Length: 281
Image (tube, rainbow, N blue to C red; front, side, top):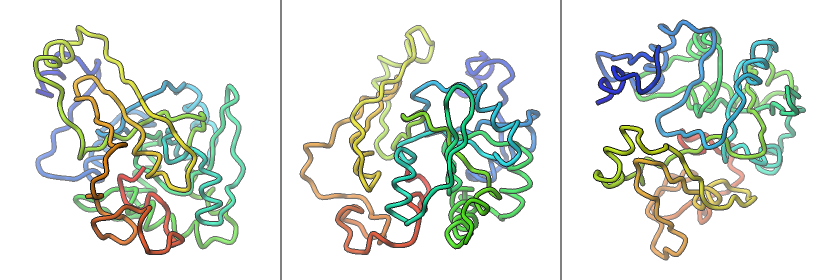
């Protein structure tokens, strides 16, 4: 099906499908793609992330190509709303000052490498990220490079600004979510009769609606459960606000099932970033 869409140029001209001979996992598949792209920079977008607001990529490219110590620019998500406050209250870290770029927008220092949508140079990816850290099947840069390699150096540094400058990771602060993370455990296809002909043939306008309110909180988990995205081709998400059933997931702090981070008895001051588990955003 994907090949048919490629041949019909549904993804635009110049788009290439890279077929791998075996299972590579995210990190190795990305590395394989980086070896064949012909552009100096890449916009990396995982399959379960959606752009929900527009962003002027000309400003992003102007910033990353003109500032030698800006090596990564991430798109703003729920994780990076109130980011400075969160790092202060959670980790006792004061962020280095943001950098002003075109049209009044700013780049905020990001103290972890996130895999969510971002712009980076191919050279930096190959020489720094994959050059400094070995990654295997079913591994990813966020865990191996961000959590295991970058975060300890940031956390233990005596000069945070200088330590961060080495990594050069920033996010574009737009004051609102630009990208949204879909929950793979909750996704369901819309009724075939509704979506197959209209959606896939693009006879209906394709749009996405982001619903729910974002509330300031010391935890992003609480805010995230109130956000829903209605995506053409996918069934409308159900609202769990009235649910009184037992929490069925696994707490990512202690690893036990049956309760969330909010009910965990383990100290919330445990020394790790919120995104230390890949996919939490």
